[in-house]
Image 1: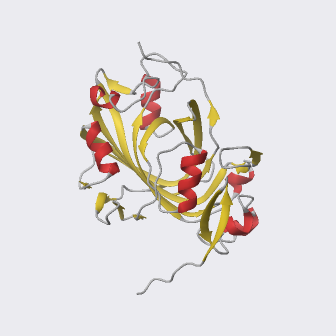
Image 2: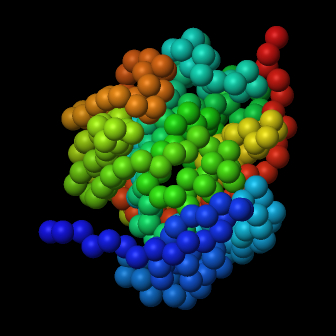
Length: 306
């Protein structure tokens, strides 16, 4: 079946011109999306989670914008692997410390995201990240480890974050300080199977993944809300970005089987190879969820350099 080209319009984002779908949520609402309109979308289970999160206008590197950015229907997958702390530290800024499961052993992950309905319209995303200790928290980090593996709260430093849309790249790179670029990126997640492919700049494969989806459990809206804090440096100053996720259907496989992770040629594959992962310990898939991504705020990150 031939694909139908999406008509687009050009909008200004902090002095950058980007194209967005004509008649899409961003074109019509500029982040001030009508929740009643979204509630009528058959793909969206409800909007009560967002009614409890009022938006505020803030100044940012992409100009004045409303925060949080709302994601009304999403699906995600995360592959968590063990890696030697020695390899991890070569990729971490000195101010951040890896979250260790045992002396000399940390956690790295490959993540895939599909945003079907959100304030900046449909896009897909992938990431290579490192689990880190919360910036203001010392000690062994056992509590952090337990909550991280239970997906209640994660702290991360992201090495790669390719996306499929121009507005997501500009907002993510200029506004949040994330290492984002636009590329061909397919993510399909359902109750049966999870697949993803990230293209490189020549049209070949950077990274691809396929696996059976773990059995899913449904959760009432608001019952299971997890959070992810990401650390980035913007104009030389450390910031933290909070992402809250309303989990509606999810499942986990520990020491999963049947995974097919292929590393090709490209930035994501290079980043993952540099971390030298040794064993996959967990595979988490959320076939339905919602999220609120807040704008980054300055944070104090103590120097760990000697």
